[in-house]
Length: 362
Image (cartoon, rainbow, N blue to C red):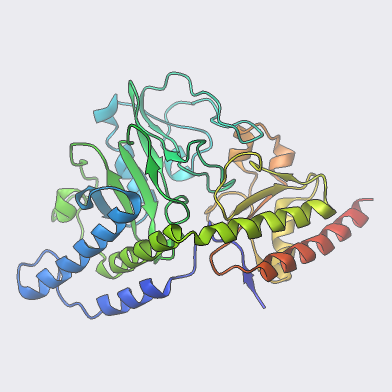
C-alpha cells in the first residue's frame, strides 16, 4: 500500500475540481467570442475568478489567470520598473522568484525559525507567506505587505488552502498561487494584482485576461482551479487542518522518541499545519527518501519542485544550517486524507530504517 506524504509538492485532485473540469470540457465556446457559446465560456471563467478571489481575499478583477505560479512570479517581477527599477528576493524564497533576484537580501529566518530584521529594503522584493520546505510562516500569519520605499511580491502558494489568507495594515503589490497545491489541476495559476495599474503583459497577442496575459484561456484548468479554491476555503473555515496539525505533531513526537538528535526545523515557531522538515545529522536526505519510497511512502528532500533533482537545501543554508546538515533534511507534508495510522506506520518504518543506518554507522 502506497502512502502519499508529499502534499507540498502537489496535491491529489479534489472531487469538486474533477467534476468542474469534466463539465467544462463540454463548453464549446471561446471566452473571447461574443456569441452565446462564447459568453457561456466567459461566464465559466469569471465564476472561477470570483472563487479564487474569495479564497485569497481580493476583488475578482485583481485575479489574472496564468499557466502556473512560476509564470505569475515572472509577470510580477516584470513590473519592477514601476517599483523602483530593481528586484530582490530573500534567500529563503522559492526558485521561481529567487532566480530573478538582482541583489542579496539578508536571511529572513535564523536556525530556530524566528524571523530576523530585513534591513531597509528598496524596490520590489519577494517575501513568502509560508515556506514550502520548512512550513515556517510569518510571525503574524499575515501576508507580507509593501512598505515605505519598497513593494512586495508575496508567494502564497503553500499558504492558500491550508490557512486563512490574511493581510496586515498594508497589502502586498502582488501575490502568486497555484491550483495544484490546493487540490486543483496542474498547469494553472494566478497573479493577484493589488496595485492600481494593470500589469504590463509579457505575453502579447489577442489581449485576453483584460489585456494582462494574451492567449486563449485554459477554461478546463480554470474551472478546476475555481472549484478547488472554493472547496479549500470551506475546509479552512471548518478547521479541518487542525487535525492534520495534530497528526504532524504525533509524527514528530514518534520520530523524536527514537532519534533525539533529529532536528525539527521551525518547531518553536508557527508553521503550516501539515509540514515537517526534519534533519537527522549524518543520514543523507536522499537516502531517506529512497528508502522510504521502497517502503511505500512518498516524501521529499529539498525544494517542493526541483525537476527531479535532489540537492542540499539553500533555504536551510540561509537559515544557518551547514551544508552537511542541509543535505540530511527530509520534508514530510500531510494532506486532508492523511490518517493517524498513516503517520504512525511512517514513523515505525522510518525508525526501522534509522536503526539499520545507526548499526551500519557504528
